[in-house]
Image 1 (cartoon, rainbow over the protein chains, first blue to last red):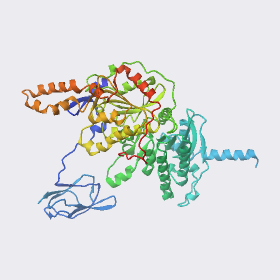
Image 2 (cartoon, each protein chain N blue to C red):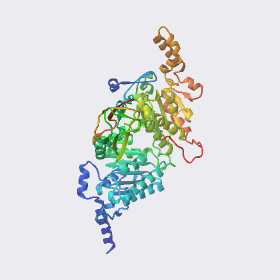
Image 3 (tube, rainbow over the protein chains, first blue to last red):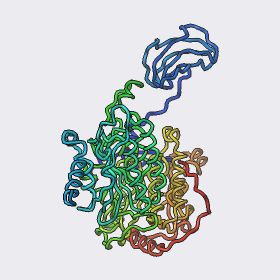
Image 4 (tube, chains in turn green, brown):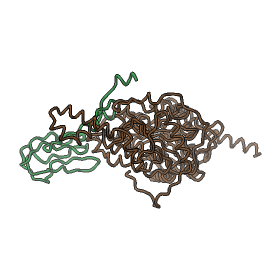
Length: 108
Length: 513
């Protein structure tokens, strides 16, 4: 009971606030963020094989931007909409973790 | 050769094989803080009860120089024995012999004892301590694993299956434990993962230790793969032996009854604060109603917002499922739903009545919950309760709101008896949330919206935050005094003893796995 008094946390469920404790897993959950559509993230960890575009280059939807090797497969990273390459953060042979922002783009 | 010489020769052969991988390997095993496979079996089983089979089996690998190698017992020990005089089948992988690697004959020994346990309808205990597939045996190793998984599945719900992870258990090997009913892990000894740290590092660049990736604590706390966590092997064996006392031999029997014992005297109403927003330890309530105040908790460290485990009432095993207000206010979420649903199905398969103690504000809100599939996970608990035909008794202590009320073995899922304390609040949601919706306009238009809000919350509380609305509809059978909880459950169990319900004929249901 003494432990309860010092470690209390509060959880709100449907408008009511409950005194309780959190689990480690709950505390470590990753808060959701609105995705930035102008950033191309690595969807899987891997190695950059080739960067096919240059900053300032106009690119059409569906064109390949980067070839990313992961799990022994070459993955084509495609342009999601018609637009322009703003900034390139990776170069060939780079090892990237999952969700690394590899390219910055902007729509036409 | 005289018969005496034959006997001496036999003894010599057996003694030789019992040395496993030899002194050096045994010494190494000890340095890792591990017992040998044989020591483990003897520690779990009753004294002098172990009978071994297939001791003379040899491996069948003929490539890569393996033909010249002798692997005693092919790295696994199988046999039968008793625990508290109750027969069990057991196998233990011997890490001192070729790292306990699984080849064709090794697998054949395991499947032989599995076939025995299924035929004889006795529990199976498997001790896993293996480096994985024996690469030299190629696809024969994979065939071996497949045969084991198939038998695990066939035996599921027929005999209790227990897996004890006392060393590495990696790659495909992890799926045998995952298919069994109870997985035991030991600190610093158990390691379970599909892909090891070295591959993860080379492919993904993520640097993680074996312990942090798939150690005992990870599986007991984060993944939910393990049901029992122990500080050392001896404690683990005690847990196994205790578990065996609560469960039956097979699905056609009931657990063995014990002499009845009253619980320690405590005032249950003193444990539970009347303010539904204040926490307490639900274990204290379970212990106030079980024989000898004994509660054998399962998955203590995983999803601790729900409690599951066994206790006895007048000597008979009962499975308890209870919300834990002390952690995350006792909400249902993905993990707690998985945890409870699997336990409910175990109890149902093995003829163990289920007592549900309810006090929850609903489901855990959050994007991570929604995106990790709280709908599909939450559905498992509804499915498991609805499908269970063992006696099902529910006691609502305080909050029973919304979907949580339905899920926690409500009348509507065919609970046999539903009791509520006078402090129970059975409603579509808590008064705060409900008042904000029902009286939205009045609150907005009031001169003092906050005062109006509080007034309307009180109004809603007086009208709905009680057990009598549900009692008036017969959704709960009786509003009881907290002190009556044990006697009411006992009587309900007594009259449910011959419960017999027929479910529609089907090959099998399709639960939201």
